[in-house]
Image (tube, rainbow, N blue to C red; front, side, top):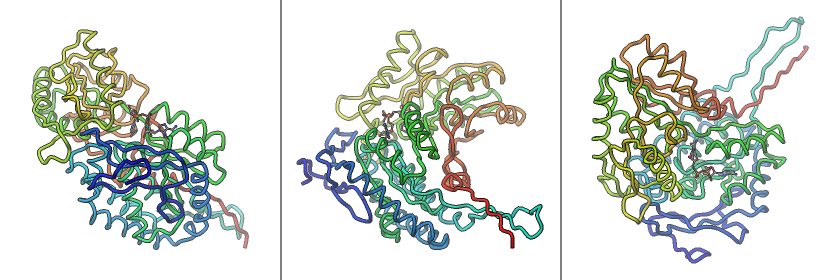
Length: 486
Ligand code: NAD
């Protein structure tokens, strides 16, 4: 039994803070219950960090930086690769916690843990290639060296939609570069990040290098970002929160990586086969119940294929089996929290008021668990809310378009620029899209853009900086120029 009388569910992990190499319940008087979105039952009790706990975590990260930043890249690689292997070994057990606290189907949850393991492995492998360079000198006898150094202790803030993947990008990126970290994972989905910490500790990450805290998000960020020991901020979440955290970081002239929301357009051209595009988009759109920042979320279909596409996509959406993620036949789980249900209701109410055609779905399923029917809105106008605001859920607006130029202009019409997609069989069109769409990531004829080895990040209000790829490692490094006359 936990302090507030909430018993941890039998197959759920006991929760805690991890500070300076030890699990603790912290010293705050408050905490919160973690809710299973499929049943609305409490899974366990999550302690919050007090200001003293946060200070202890940041100070531990500062002290550990002296040791970790001098640990050889080869040793860091060995530890990160071991953590990757431990995650793989434990993936089935951790996946159950992901599904319990976040809602996604077990197969998706396991896939997420394996992808997180790939991230640990990739960053581990890459950190032995943290090369500097020698710049030929204009002065005889001088050596101009460009040296890459870890930036310092990092504060990371993560959302609830990918409880393994997002913390993995921050933990593995920071640790590979030689940085230490205080991470605030999402309070809604804490056990998964506890499991990542377990893997790191069991792999040999020394005390203080990785610290995990929870609390009231705004209070934690208001404490950690200005903390004198913290040198870099990495945040994944919504645009309004990202703007606030960037202001806090600017006050201390601290580097920031911001992975914010998106509203990914997908352009389906007449020159492509409709059925494979529909199948690929059904899988991508309803994955994680649409709560994915790179989810295809504004569908533009060229007029010649439009009617066929809407019909096939509607049929596919209608056939999806929605249920508890633990059931073997579930294809889509519940929304992760009650706020998302309310948001879906808002999008649908707006579409109804405008007289738009809802070809399937449009309402909640039952009244226990945050289940929402896969929903398709045809002939969506550019003005309706779901075409302008990120849906972050299983609601799909579809609209026709005519020319490449029109498609690109509408794709670029919002202040977002995270991901974009297109299906076309004509390489000249693909080239026009590559050149014309303002986005951080573009998937042409497939949607697999999020992988350990490639940069993941946005432009415009979707944020700046990248996670993943060599760019992800760069974001944890400072550049020092040393000019030495021998
Ligand atoms: P929200 O803005 O309240 O929170 C988003 C995340 O940021 C949460 O995990 C929250 O704990 C954290 N957060 C909130 N305030 C914070 C603060 N002051 N300091 C540090 N962290 C803070 O929104 P929400 O209702 O949880 O999620 C809905 C919206 O968030 C979505 O519409 C989507 O746009 C966005 N979102 C984006 C991503 C992404 O991957 N970019 C992930 C999750 C949510």
